[in-house]
Image (cartoon, rainbow, N blue to C red; front, side, top):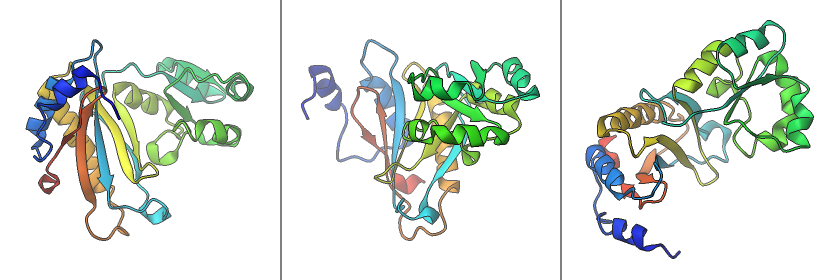
Length: 229
């Protein structure tokens, strides 16, 4: 894969043979984020899980103490009193059955997270083929299927992120923006890593965390010393 001049210049600052401590890695990733926009800092965690087995799946959510630096648009599927509750809590969109054709036929996806009350899951289930592949399907494990829609919205707006294994058994998650202070990124990083370590499936044998890499949107990856975790 060919990289641009900026990327190549940034890559020279990273010692590929070195495994960095979190503090060093965060400082380095910020230094290598040279794009004209405020790049997102992401963590990529390669695990020893085999996601083909249900008992080795990892999925959950964590509230980052300093948020993600991104404005999150929340859609809530609800009915009755829960519609008013969702609107009062700051949901960007609230609706029910009428949203199904809008999403299915018109391809409307102007939201980042979908929340649903349990009594709406029969309706929302029909959107599985559209929302599932995009990671937008409400899920009880992530706290997005709940009767307490106000708390769900508040947590999401405050910086709650979902994490899950992809097909290659890697977890990808944002921990903030390049404009964040080192301290804020470190607090977010620690919150995510604590959650991932606690989520270790008991069925996983051998090494759980194979590698942990930090990178900005356009920058090179910086590998961390997993022995620290």
